[in-house]
Length: 422
Image (cartoon, rainbow, N blue to C red; front, side, top):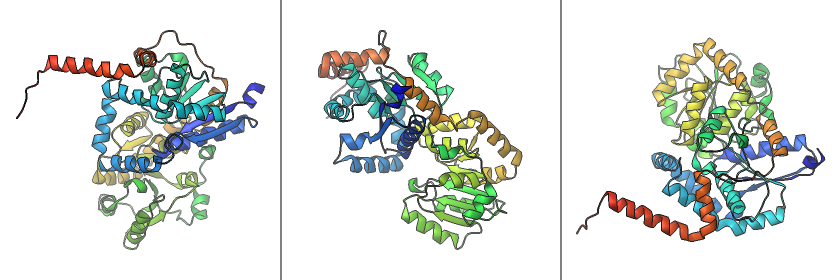
């Protein structure tokens, strides 16, 4: 126990999606509560690696995904399993090794936890080269098995569901390195709803169906969705609590819309007490992000999923609908119809709440903290195919990529000869 109390935990995260950061904060909170004398530090991996350009890179990434989701989805699927593009991505982590060494020298951690896939890859690369032997944990923040999460020198994977554990085992990850804890969320999402009291506290009516809409900053709440909610497909008069985050333009749009809507629209900016709004709502309309949906599960809040991003959000949506805690809408009109149908079927909402309670998401961060406390570096005697490739990179250095490209080009030429055009 004394060893755990004096551990120095380094949690690496990234703001390419708020979920990675929120998971890191949940782990910091949970570990600090269990072991008050331990040091737990959260570092933004991308900010540390690229202090002058990370903000620009993050903005371009977020805007690019929003503008071209199909391109992002294509690349995601192309790199889901190890292949040429995925190998290139893993290879690029080598160039950040000196900077990562500097971080380890400054923080001197006894354990490194990654809630961001590139950070997990960088730590694996350091261990491949024998530059550190610190134990490493990767916390997968979606219900996905993408290759960018899987690295040969990761000592423990903490995953959100049995489904992810099964998929990792298919990729060759030993069962001894996988623990199902649930996706880590803050402890404030573990309380039981006091719906009427919270509605009174926040100035909301108790006699209207209350729908929480999240994702305004990503464009989920726009004029098309509002028009569908105003249509005859929605037979009830609703109380719509719309979270716009830091998007002041969206906040102004929702405020203007509230003046002419037949529903009661309550626009919100960024709020810290989102757990209270989840507790007072009857239903949430949201994108299927890993963290936000895990928080909804913990609050026993039925979900109506909308505009899943191709890639990890598609994986999340499949898991949540199969688990029976969410319904998925395809388009605005379908959302309006399913929203109205759910509100007219209280027994279905009750069943979704019961299924959420059986998933036991409330204690996920505590379970993860317990696993973090006892993890040790594992020996590596029989690497998987992915591990063999990584070890080859370590032994042969930068020569591997040109040789791989030559082999790939030769196979393509043999399969399909090219002719000169022009």
